[in-house]
Image (cartoon, rainbow, N blue to C red):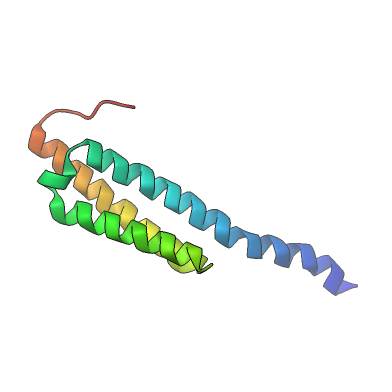
Length: 99
């Protein structure tokens, strides 16, 4: 009887991996796009390229159902994209318009 009561809990925990990974991927994708819009390709080339590379790897890992690794790569992509966007904005001296 205990197995039957624990089954929904186990199923819920297993389902969290794809959800967390997907939300991290979306957040990283949005931040990379914001960095691109700010001109980070030219003004923060290292950070922008790192963000794109980590985002690509996060998508690859998600494709292989390696959700924990996917989330970790997406989080790194997000951080690099934030840094790239900050550098791009500070180098141009004008704020990026909200889209």
